[in-house]
Structure formats: C-alpha cells, structure tokens
Image (cartoon, rainbow, N blue to C red):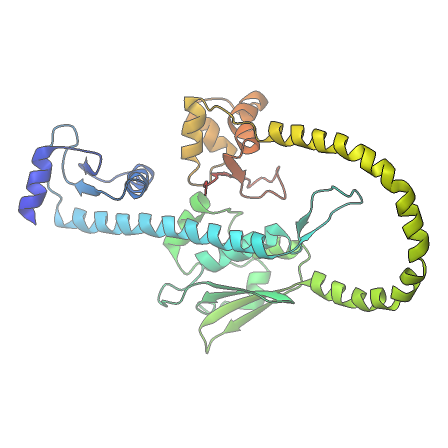
Length: 346
C-alpha cells in the first residue's frame, strides 16, 4: 500500500490523482471530489505539496481533523442531494392548480412550494443521526407525510416549534444549512410554512422515535365534493348537447381555417424558445459555481461585479431563461432568500 502511494507521488499529479498539502477550504475540496465523480473516480492524496511533490506529513491531530472535514463534506453533498430529490418528487407527483382567470395563466402546486421547502429543510436539518432510518416521504390521495427520524429533542414541544422556538439537534448540519439549503433564519421555517395557510398536523412519536408532518391535500377533497354536483347536472348537460353540437359544427370551419396559422406561429415560438445560447467563460464559471445554491450577492461577488440590474440580467436572468440555472423558490422570484442552482442535464 505504502509503495503504491510513493510511486504515485513520484509520478506526479495526473487527472485521476491530485495532491493537497492541507485541506483548508471545503468548497475547493468538494469541487475536486465532484470532478473525480465526473471522470470515473480518482485519488486525493493529502500531505503532499502539489507544486513540488514534496511530502509534508500530517500530525495525528491533523489526520483526525482532515478525516472529520472530509466526512463533513460528504455529508453536505448528500444533504443537498436529498433535498433536491425530495423537492423533485413533490413537483412531479403533486397537482398543479391554475391561478387566475386566464386560461394560460401559470399554475402552482396544490400545496404551497414555500411550505414544502420549509418542511423538507426542517426534516433534513433536525433529524437524528443516531438512527439509520432515512427521511421518508409519502404522497397519499388526501395527504402528504414527511417522516423525520428522531422525536423532538430536549423537551421541545409541537407548540414550541409553531411559536418559532429552535433547539438544534445537529450543530454541524444546522450551521451549514445556510450555505446548502434555502435558509430563512433560526426558528422561522415552520412559522413561514404555516403562514401559507396550509392544513397541517404535527405528530411527535416518542415510541417510534420519529417526527411526522402531515399536510392535507385540500384540493382532493374539493374535487370529491364537486363530483356529485357534476353528476347531478349531467342530465341538463345532455339535454343541451344538441344545441351545443350545432354551434360547434357552425364554428368548426372557422377554427380549421385558423389552425394552420396557429400551428405555424407555435412552431416559430418553440424554435425561438429553445435556441441554443452560447456561454461566455464567466457564464460557464457561474453555472459550475451554482452546483451549490448561491444567492445573487454570492454570484456578483464571484464575478467581482456590483449588484446592478444589467449584471444580474447578463449572469443570472439569462442563464435561468436558457435553462442553465433554476431558482430554489420559483413561486416567488423576488424572495429575500432566493438562490440559484445549476440545472442537472439528464
């Protein structure tokens, strides 16, 4: 084993082997690990001067600190992955409700996106790491359940968390949440979720050692209530069908004549919407920088630019429109906690 490492050191750095004298910056090391994962893996050798290849061995305490730091980095990436996976699951499987009177008005999730974000972040950050069970998400016909391992800690009650009381269980996850997940401040997550008017119940199960958030799907109940009304009116609709049929037949020619114009227009629009955007080197850097969600201020700082409208439009708005970046809170583009993250192409 030692002979292999010495041979690698002697051979110098290559694409699959990188040297670091010390690990000081989480972000740079995380980028190295991500680069390895994108190129079939690699080895990071700590204790070697990357410019000269000279060995500068770590002390015992430094070995412990480095091991803990690498574990923390792995936990952070896993935390972000879990968050994105859960939110994707929600957006894929929950209904979209039309907003406004316009037929083509933008819809929104039946359960407010902000509430889902806050409940998800809460379950990930405040879960118990002493239990090997994962955070579990269930979507039923009438409700959504979020099961977080571990009951409320240190005598904390459901009334406490509704009032905004915060008592972190995992200080590492708690302290790093601001850099990894949509973060709204200490104790404000649950209150922000409740401000959206959701019908939610909390269960602190000491016996099963889990905390369960149940969000009721009001839309499904409304649909069920209205089904009887629709069924009761079916005879009236059937009685008027002949009249409607005649009107539809009279207008069919007009619709048919206009269909080609609409089709041609739609084709032009779709081609213009999907036009490939050529990125500058700075724009590519920002896309990669947003592998971890970033605020506007962080992006402007990375670029060394002032936070002006023209800079935001060039390096953020245009990348969102082109599909390279996406907002962490798309329902509220001007939210104070808005961040932008790289869109993973599939």
